[in-house]
Image (cartoon, rainbow, N blue to C red; front, side, top):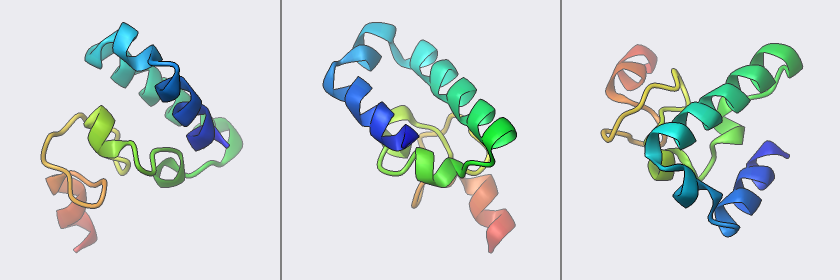
Length: 79
């Protein structure tokens, strides 16, 4: 559901108004709250958005070096 909300926000160009840093902060806060309080999955929330936001779904760090949504550190931890 939250992924669909991000899609709607993207369609309305909200992230363009916010800019990169505020967008990353907002998305981190949404994802952290959803995962902590409601047992959501960050990978599902950020599906198709990790590159757009330059956020790793594993640790939510900002990174331009993403592969399948994961930064180098998270890729190494999983491999």
